[in-house]
Length: 113
Image (cartoon, rainbow, N blue to C red; front, side, top):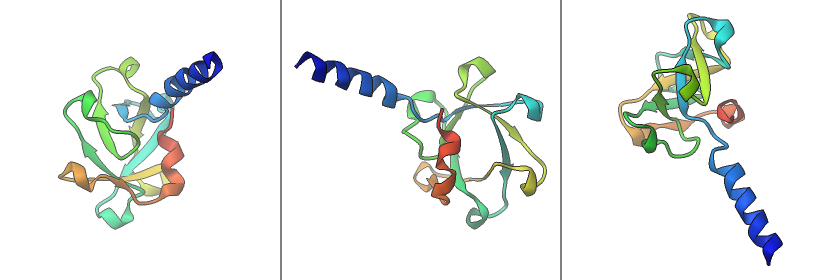
């Protein structure tokens, strides 16, 4: 019984924050974990992102991003590039939270911690 409880506790701690949606936009590419390009149309994106106002609005790895004021507060440091070929991830910013979604599941791992 104790082993089961300990396993459950450890699993909960590990999985609780296995995704990262608190992001900080860096000034230089070499400071970033991930290079991001903002596309003009949703169908061009790997991820449709909705920018939330508060960190508690984040729900898993669904494309709800909270931009932090400082790098140390973020789970991922991103740098916005000027050209699509420079990017690790292409995003499209949507107007409503329910529109946030992965369009390319092969890129989901990029937002894991």
